[in-house]
Image (cartoon, rainbow, N blue to C red; front, side):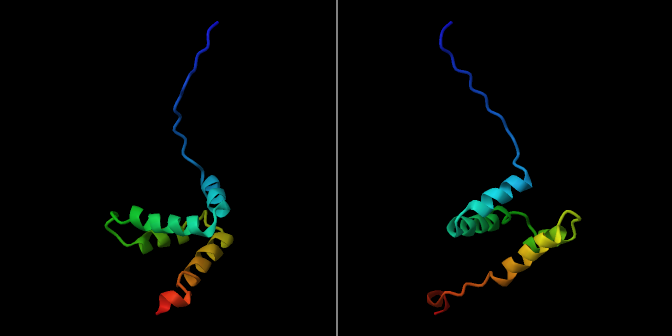
Length: 86
């Protein structure tokens, strides 16, 4: 029997848990880049991203812990570095 190689491509959508685990494991620079890419990805929606945020906050799957994270993101979204304030 000779050597052979089989290559298959499988398209699998990651679960929200898997995406959350990856995001949580990233250092701050990758997390910041992620949010910057979200702004680009939603740029063609033709509507403000706040509409989507409202839909998320109204969803039954959002736990109190998820709400707390969303609130913290909002509270800490302003750049506090001195060199950026000048």
